[in-house]
Structures are given as C-alpha cells and as structure tokens.
Amino acid sequence: MDIDFDKAGGLVPAIIQDATTKNVLMLGFMNREAYQKTVETKKVTFWSRTRKCLWTKGETSGHYLDLVSIKNDCDNDTLLVRVHPNGPTCHKGTDTCWGETNEYNPILFLTELQDFIQARHRQMPEGSYTTSLFKKGVNKMAQKLGEEALETVIEATNGTDDRLVYEASDMLYHLIVLLTSKGIRIEDVASELLRRHNPDWDKDRRLSKSKE
Image 1: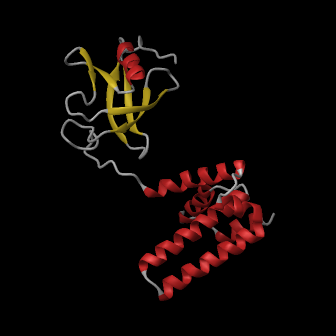
Image 2: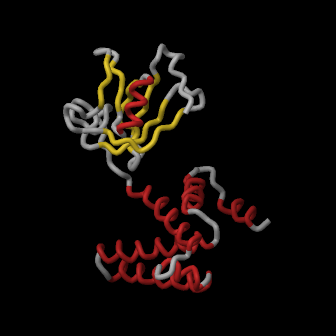
Image 3: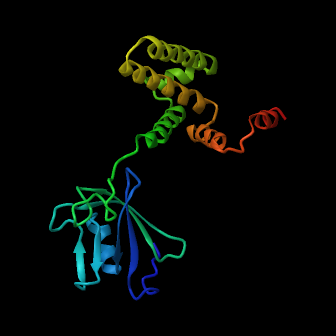
C-alpha cells in the first residue's frame, strides 16, 4: 500500500473504526514505523506527538485494538483502520473519544443476513434449509412467506409480544429469501421506504412510472 507519509512531515491521520458496529472510536497518527508494527503485531500502534515515541493502544490498560483491516484514502494520506476493540477506547473510560456508546445497531444485521442468504443461493449446500427453499422455486417461496405473514397476524391479534417478534422474524427471513431469488436486496426496500418518507413523494406518479 502506497502511503504518503511525507505530505504531513512523516505522519498520517489514522481513523479508528469498529469493524462490527461501524462506529468511529478515535483518531490517532501513524508514522512508517507505527504502521509497520501495527501490521506485524495486529495491535494498533500510533506515534505519540507529545511523548515522541511509539505507543500501542492498550499496552497500559489492556484495552487493545485488534487489527481487522487498513485502507488508504484517495490521496494516500489518511488511513481507515478497522478494529475489534477490547474494552473502552478512550483513556477517560468511554467507548469512543467523543463519549459515545459503541453499540451495534441490529438493523445492520439485515445486510449481513442477506449476504449469507446470497452465499447459500450461489453455493446451494446440501442439508441447508435456505437451499431447500431456493430449490422449491418462487411460487413455493411466496406461499411460505404468506404462511409466515398469517402467523404474524395471528400473534399480533391474539398472541404475546414475544411470539409476535418470533413470527415476525420468520416472516422477514422468508421475505429476504424471496427477494434474493428475484435479485433484489433488502436495501432496495429500505430505499423505497426512504423515498416514501419524503413529503414530496407521489404514490400515483410512482405507480404510473412502474407500469411504463
């Protein structure tokens, strides 16, 4: 990777991002030696501008930043470092240096789930329930989605909240399987909902365009 350390006097900013939650944890600086040590040890290491020495994040607290990946930006002078943090990142004890809580938003899992389902669609491993759905074809998948939707309605009208969440999860899973079979992503559905959230959205105009 070609990193331009010379542009800023031997240092480049390193933006630290949690690889799972996608939250930004902190900003540090690396020189060539810090970068090389990070790559070699898989523990994020910076150059301390105050102490004028290398420091590996967590060497005192034990809250290391385990390296996942490093990407260069378009100008080759800023790094995006994705990590798995072992505890709070900030020296003040907070998850991030901005005092934010580093929590995973479960809605992001829908993308991961469809990535997994797409892999099943490509590989079609034997013994997989998802594979069996794909093999039955679109009509059977749509029928199964309808059954799960009905069970969700039943729990909503005459069941418990826990069972409603359970059945709604089944329904959503089977919806994503059906979408995958049609080459459609769950993000396409989210984009449609985003368009509808716009006060200027015109349902009739949208439907007329889809019929053209």
